[in-house]
Length: 205
Image (cartoon, rainbow, N blue to C red; front, top):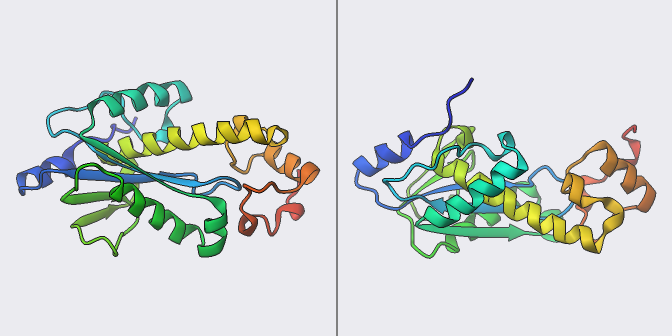
């Protein structure tokens, strides 16, 4: 069993004199529909939230529970959302970076260090460290992954009420067998990423 993300990176930075350390992660990068959502989270330096982990390893109920705890205890939380039209226009990597930049700008307190899941934000002039699989190592990044995932899931649940024929409530826009089937039946909606669908009709059921 792998250990949970901890505050090792954060504590090392506190010892170097940094005060406000933001963890940054995204959700929805690989989806066929809807936005990519990024979150930035500044945790207090004396609180560890039990059970925080990479959002992909948590049940929806556990994510919702931790989402509320993180909101309650965090020093500040920022959100960045880039929708499918911009993803198609600038590509998913650039859209992810823009969402992360927006999440940092959305913080009410300016961070003095960024811990980022696998991406560099070169246009932001703040010391930073991209960490491969950071959401499994840093509690701040894992917290951001939970905030981003729950925020995006809620957005896709709202889209389900507008486009019930795609059943976004079940798959949240990811490329599941059911999603492919419904895409073939109804064609793409206005929230589908056209650049992700070029080979959609050649994928077997």
